[in-house]
Length: 83
Image 1 (cartoon, rainbow, N blue to C red):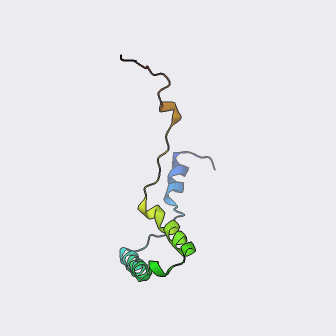
Image 2 (image 1 turned 120 degrees about the vertical axis):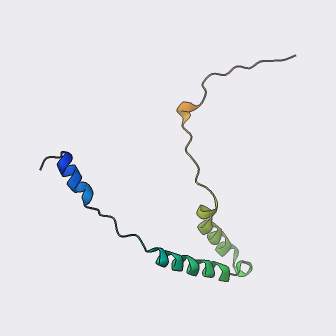
């Protein structure tokens, strides 16, 4: 079967993605997670557990770094000495 606009259209109709969770289920999961986080007594954790806890929550606290493209960096610059 050749690949053309008709076969592409038919292929696009077939989704391999799973169905998304219902909003109600997602809200319930969020509530359970929040209750579990509030129940953790951080002061009673060992140093190793504190580091693991921090490692687990860091992706949700900090934004992901954006990649800096070196091609957009200036390659020439001027230095002016003022006396």
